[in-house]
Length: 274
Length: 274
Image (cartoon, rainbow over all chains, first blue to last red; front, side, top):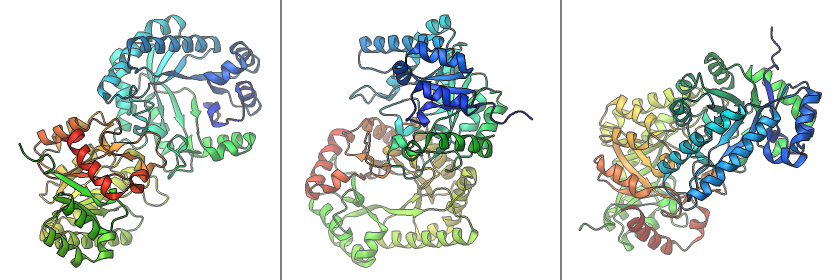
């Protein structure tokens, strides 16, 4: 039987006490073969230093978080956002990951034009395709929970993300599926099948009832109501065999001993996900 | 030109300093022809006293909040929930409103069976139909925002609510559309048209970015990103001509002078909704 931890990827946002180098080193120490890094901590430790640590430890990067944030009031601002995304694509190439996670952005300040913002997202992703292709990086459109539609991501359902990825029909564009964002959706299993050829990532965690804030409403796998194994099996059945990221934003988890969190992640990954 | 306030209904949850009798009296004083009442404050003031105040003032009740909460772990508990709904139906008849708003309930304690809970909702609504028909009361299935799927309402989209109402095909069952819960949905305009023959109510308010809690994340009309007028027109175009409830759960609004809130509601109803 294959190692049940083979596909586990640790998203560094889950433990905010570690910088990027510490997260890479911790993955190596805990026998976790994949890590997902964030741009800001990578920049702090230095891109070259992170790339070196990855090479030395053999830990691979499942994705870089994050690009996106396409909608803006003016074409000048939208062009700036694209430039920022191109820098993120360069960083992916340097770190040796082929997936840039896109959190696509909310409504422009003061705007109520949700349809227009969704068009800006599609246009923004399309504009990045040639550059991503040159660098060998894929753009993963991640739908975010509808509670983030106004301020973080107008792509609120997997159906909308699939529409973009399947509509652009480029090998450079796909979707990233996070259970937290899609578990409630009556169309989720249909859309997972529809995403069969474009799924670039799968994220697990759980839903926290009555959270301290909407940004910190994720729980450890198994502590909430999400049918994790059913969703994981559906994504697998559709043909995805890549890394599975554990990404939790939770104040209690952040307050815990980081190595204890890593141990729990590994246990719960086996007992709740695989 | 018709009075633009003709369809305004004041949902008493918007001002929590008033009891039911005060809310009724305030509607009369402010020239608001409709009120939406909640069961608990009505019980506190007495059902007969409220019915009397309504008759004396001429204020009509657009809906009673709320029935529902169908999913439960055991058939005994589910039967108890149905009995509670029958009492709510009786209260509707006594107050002279033909709409009982249903907040359908979250997952049973410890359950992860979202599909099963959605079936329990459909079965629960179906079980109430004969009793509702005898009392001349309609059951309004209200989809709640997906962020309430776990603990309050597994009916997370207007599509799911329409599936129940159109599937049961009873004159006793319809849907209630609240902009707060559905505005993010890429299918909302399609589903509003689909709900043409079953729309029993329409609620307005706005979305509050970065709320103090998920339960208090509504704003005054015009203070958020929701395309209120577009949604109202879509509901009207589909044939709905009934009262439009203003329902806001917001700590800042609750802290304000109630009569000032009523004045703002009337102003914003005209400037943002009609």
